[in-house]
Length: 204
Image (cartoon, rainbow, N blue to C red; front, top):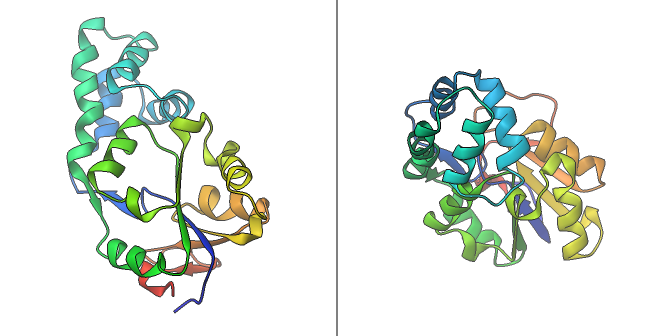
């Protein structure tokens, strides 16, 4: 086990939660909009992750930026909502958070949307955290300043915090560039050359 104590900041998607296997909703939405999945992903980053807007409001924005009819708004909004029913916690999450919160302050940080925020609530994890930092609430993603905002709001030095996440760039390299500590959670064991763990149970 990895010995830690203090302030631990967890990513949400891919670290604590995942989408149960099913249709690739991102591709389905992109097809409905007649754009590439890459283009859709960029629209999410540029518009939905940094604005606290509803699914219908985002659907209206997507329709406005694409070549589909306004009559498609409700259909696209329903597609945007589809991940909520598929959101699940990894099996090691609740037991690990229960154990870690006894001697540590835990925080949640995530690039996410209003859908992600609702998933956090439906999965009943808010009570584990002393603070929650979501890009749609702060208007900025992890790469562009969300970590800095979190550290400033919470106080102390960046190296007081240990960040746990599954993205090499957003959760591992960005915190380190700010002098925080970070560990990559690599559940599939596909990344080499990083300080990493395979399960949250390795944190003690």
